Length: 205
Image (cartoon, rainbow, N blue to C red; front, top):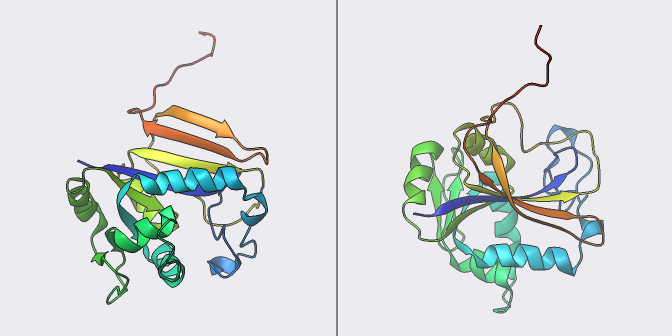
């Protein structure tokens, strides 16, 4: 049984849209593409590389898949852990509009909830989601994410697609690890810990 992990870059106000460059995703007039780039350093590169090394397969939304498919097949260095995993391992693409996927070892997922549940039983390691804002909302709504790798950057944008939006299922999370780079980027890993518990500081009466 695989563990479904979600790794994503986030601003402090929760925006995950187009971190790597202006052309990635300009939907809804988003003008802040590339906000991650000034914070990139070796520590960030090591964290991301380590995540990809744990992958058994990938589950990607259509937009993220198309961005990856334009870039990573052109990276042929066998020592690159990201390119090696993405180019070789199975890639499952959640899309109702794509007619076909041509990148090596790719297949389409049409009905996310039952098909992802089945995929989690297919692989022994991590089934990884990277980015994929639209897909993430569906996974969150149906409580399908087992572990979150959230990379927070010290920046506020005020607009853009957010990870935790309407439809997120209430859940308690348990912090597994956290560390901070010299540039103020925080890597935090959380696991599901059941439903939230509640209390009150209100005085009786």
